[in-house]
Every structure is written in structure tokens, then in C-alpha cells.
Length: 319
Image (cartoon, rainbow, N blue to C red; front, side, top):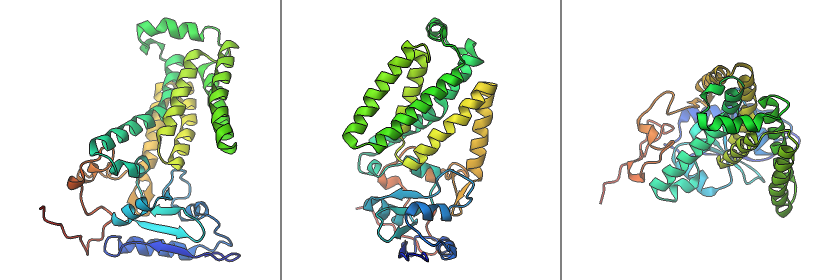
């Protein structure tokens, strides 16, 4: 592929497990790309995604051989580009970005517990700031009675509404995050810890941000790091801002309407013919064994939803 600098692109699958229709569709898309240069998997990812208007990732990145082998066994397709260690995995669902290969290397109870923690962290990262803003601005009566005095004393000397507080702190967190990535590893960790402590204490003492907002933003930032996939983590960070604006404008009603809009988009979205919220929408009870909770290996289905109907793996008898 590529006109200026040609690079070999490998399309990997296991015959009999991957769907022939999927193989044909991906091959057709690859052959239709007429770019001068395919420099990285990211550029190929953007050209393959459908629809291109969605910013939710529809392909999974990995550099781990065991992850590639596991997805090949499940009937997925892998794309490798010459000179790059990153593999593209397709098709994927939303739950694929919340799973880690380490979940299968430990006991199923521990793996399920870690997945539940990630799911809770996902909801905290998306909704925590917007819910706090809506409670403070519109629904103060919902706050429990013992906390009202603490919240009121924290907000008493703040000169602007909670949405401005949240935007200031979120922007500051993003600056510290980007600075930590660009700097060398030892310096980046120091900047992240020291910068966060110094800036947080300074803005509170200056009366620019309340103590509770510092706690909310800090918990939200930590929760976003729990998500194992960097692409999905970036999307979650981006979703917080429209939710905060909706909360500052309409309160909890705005948060609910914005959430419905996101869910409708996810239900409509597909990854190479596979529903993005599968197996929840459309609902498939059998496939739920390996989503938020991981069942034991002997209870998991050997044939996945990607598997071809022509050839099935033979079930081995229990010894």
C-alpha cells in the first residue's frame, strides 16, 4: 500500500473461524485506499473506520502477541503494517476496550472483579463532574443534610459558578497530563505529582476553586487512568465536557438527555458489521459470559459471534 513509499500490509485470520463476508469486506476496503503514504496504523485506522463521523474507536490497538493470538482464535481479523509493532484488531465492541489480556491470566473471580472496577471507573470518569455541577447549580436539595454545611462553606467565597471551576481544573489537569507525557519519564512523574499538589493548594488558597471541586476533579482524573485502552480513555475524557455544559444549562435533565444521545449513537454504531454494544444491544445472554464479568474458561463458548457457520471447532470430551 502507498504510492510514495510502498509498505507491505498483512491481513491475518484463521480460516474457518473468521467470517468470509468480513474478510471480503476488509480486503475490499484495503484495496480501495489510494493514499500516497501509509505511515502508521493510526492513519490506516482512520481510513478504515465506518462511519468516519464517529470519534469512538472502532479498531483495537495492541503490541502484545498473546492478545493477537487470542483475538485470532475468536474469529477476528488482524492487520499488520511493515516496520510497525502495532496490530489493528477488528471487529470490536465497546466492551473490548474495557478488557485486558491479564484478566485471562488470573483467576476468573479476580478477573471479574477488575472488570467491575473498570466499569465503575468508567461511569465515575464520565458522569461525576456533571452530576456534581447539576447538584450544586440546580438540585441542592438532593445533597444529604450532613453535607450541606460543608458544601456551602466550601462554595461561599467562590466568585463564579461551578461550571467555570470545573473547566479551570479540567484544563489544568489536561495541561499537567500532556506535560508529563512529553517530558522524560522521571521528570514527568515529578511534574505530575508536585504540579498537581502545588497548583491544587494554590487555587484553593486563592479562592478560585473550592475544596470539593478539587476532590471531584482528582477522583475523575484517577478514574480515567483505570481504563486500559488509551483511545477509549481519550474519548471518555472528551465526553465529560459536553456533559458538564449540559449539566450547567439544564441540570440533571440535561445530563440525562445528553446520555440518551450518546447511547443512541452507540446503539446505531457498528464495527465492520458488528453492533458496537454487542452483546447487550442486541441482547445475547450467552455472550454476556465474557463482558463485564468473566466466567470460568470451561463455561465460555468456544464459538464466538465472529466464527464462521461453516466450520466449527470440535468440542473435546472432559477427561
